[in-house]
Length: 128
Image (cartoon, rainbow, N blue to C red; front, side, top):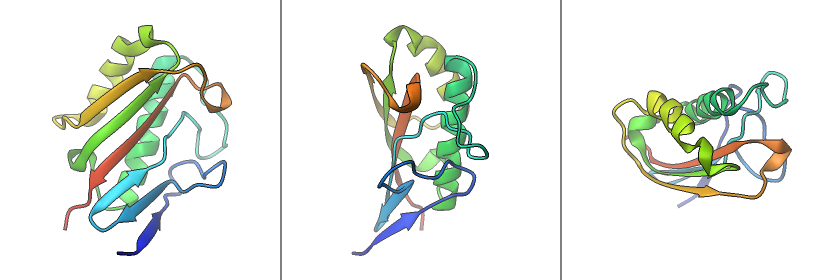
């Protein structure tokens, strides 16, 4: 089964040797998205709310480029600099998911690229 690179111009270009997402059969594996503005390549200004909104917009664009939505996501992994930001993150995240309820892991980390406060990656099943 060949691997297919998935990219979206509505999400930031990779800042290293990786892809926005890789499709393998009916599965899509996204790279972790941080709050980079795809138009400027710079981190969005603001705190956890603004960064989470940008992360979710970036992931939505990558999912869409593969023909998927949040309803197709089976698992997310969330990386937070401050676990105390979790309730605020969770509120924004929930707005983007709507009724979708993928499995999720959330961990606190010491640092993220470019000083980000949050990073999220996803695994989705591509609809036929």
